[in-house]
Image (cartoon, rainbow, N blue to C red; front, top):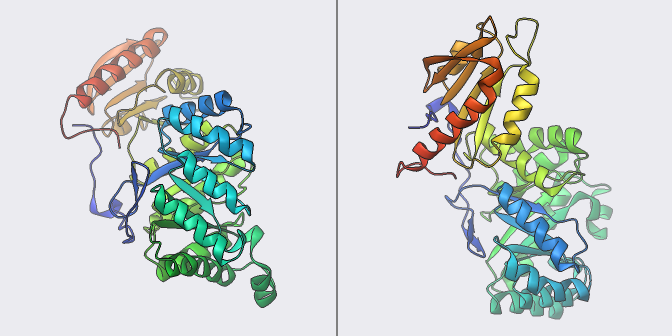
Length: 374
């Protein structure tokens, strides 16, 4: 068995939400928390968009969103959907016809705000299209685009305004007998987003899409997202997540998984435990870890690998990992398998050897019927 023991003090009690389907992917209920991202290609360029969707899916994305700002984009969407290995969400703002076209093109979900796509008759048309084409809807509340009357009422974006906006949009859908929806209430401010999500989680049983919007670049956005999403997930809030980074969408997927893996909510790929290195290191830890991350990126099986530079913490960390390597002296270190000392290996051969051991261990885990990548 892979060493992923669940102990009571590590258990997260998830909020009880109802389950919907986004294409073939369940969201909410007891389904695994899904990871999403969004393409940044010209949506009318089918080939470029499909290639990016496929790269994101290979990295682990369960769902991918595509912006459909004009008729050219919705026309291209049909071909994107046909070639996509994962469900596609169409991102809609303001124009109700784009939502109808996207549903007809095969989108699994429409990201809209019912209140900003026109009068009640237009909302009904969009909902009818969603029903006719078995398409779910995500209500997307954003602190940066709240309705004018709410800004006048509350004077500024605040949790109460965002929650009220979300519940108003929910009411529109439910008044039209539509239940196949999820909801988000994003903000770039971590405190604002967290407070709004907590209030929304108490007010509805709808599946919740988590995100800290416009979080920033790869480093700053990762940190902000990890703090905001991590705290909400720790509280049991969240059924699907999107990390918003000014970076390659594949990086968003990677960060999303790392957040979930750190909380024990998803297990996919190799979780590398490594030290920051110091003068005691018996080999170049930083270079080794960077190389291993690249060479083990293809592994989807959940497993753990410890790479520790010296014997201070190395043996202890190795006790809790599937494969481990601890630096020693005289140009070699100790290899651990399933927490136990196995054999010594020279530093100049360790990378190839570790890759071989991890691939072999991953294959063994895959052959166990009760273990699979989540």
